[in-house]
Amino acid sequence: MKQLLRALKRCSVVIAAVAIATVGLQPATASAAPNPIVGGDRAAQGEFPFMVRLSMGCGGALYAQDIVLTAAHCVNGSGNNTSITVTGGVVDLQSPNAVKVRSTKVLRAPGYNGFGKDWALIKLAQPINQPTLKIATTTAYNQGTFTVAGWGANREGGSQQRYLLKADVPFVSDAACRAAYGNDFIASEEICAGYPGTGGIDACQGDSGGPMFRKDNAGAWVQVGIVSWGYGCARPNYPGVYAEVSTFASAISAAAATL
Image 1: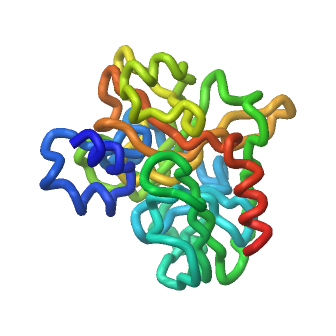
Image 2: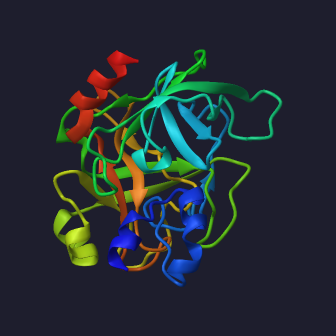
């Protein structure tokens, strides 16, 4: 059961597929149940222009205007793929100004097996003319308070959202995250954030693949995590678990160059 829970990332599609087998235990984007960010507020138009929504029920960020960085568990594998529709440029998914672009290729992290290495790149058929989100290349920004955003459910077991939500979550130490998840947490590849003592604010189902980010020393946004998994959504004692971007920065850069 624990291995099943660990594999149940925060992608709404994945969660739905195994809902019957996990009665009462739902992991998601930093938790593992549907939320558009539990305890969050609505983002303003243009506030996070790099955010995109993926048609399979995940989030992502523009690594380049024609490349999306998302979670490995959101995609089925690597290769040519025209089945994904990427929506960008808006906070309201029903806005007439939404830009919708098809995928052409997917590159999932080499060696991904459901544990760690939770990143993937999606090549777009044409660029989305919006600012991109740079990724952290060192651990310098793996601390402090982060922002997460997504269109996932706003409560555990809830439905996907029309409007982009955002929330701030503080860094949680590896020791505290290990205390919550035991050996399911991979400290060398993952970073945790949230409110383990009280819960209440977290990412959730449908937020998978979206970025966790903060301002760098120059005041620019930098991505430090990718919404990956967790037990439930915003539950006390269970912070969100994110792929640690700095760990994979060189691999992501090299992979993007091949696309």
